[in-house]
Image 1 (cartoon, one colour):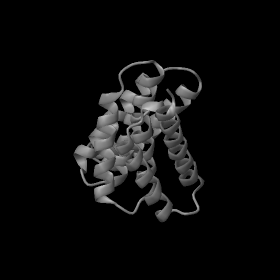
Image 2 (cartoon, one colour):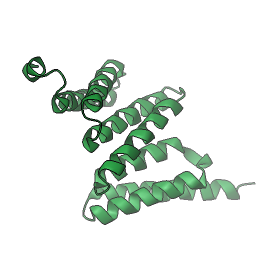
Image 3 (tube, one colour):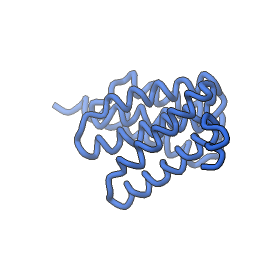
Length: 168
């Protein structure tokens, strides 16, 4: 808070506050509580950080992650999640444009794409994009367990789609 008193547009402080609120939202969600307040605060701080520095890839990746959390909550509540998914995909595309060599960005993109294409109805184009994101992440971070979990999730979604297409 002190750094914001000195400089209210200091983007790193807003980004750090957003990260803290994301952790709070994830904890609340894991505890069975709805993290709306924490997500709203995280979103407000991340948006303030992007206004202060629109070329910070880490902030755009964080913004995409916040939208993924919001979309995941909406899906769990059986609500329409298209708007946060769309905003999340736009934010992660900006992050990748600014910093194309960050494996974490591709993993966030992968999560967004898989959430956008649930179950048996996953369009092939979305699965192809998810597969590409997983491949980029693997090339950039071949030892990361998250990369292989992401690849397994893509394979599982593809298998579900294939099995659904073969059922009468």
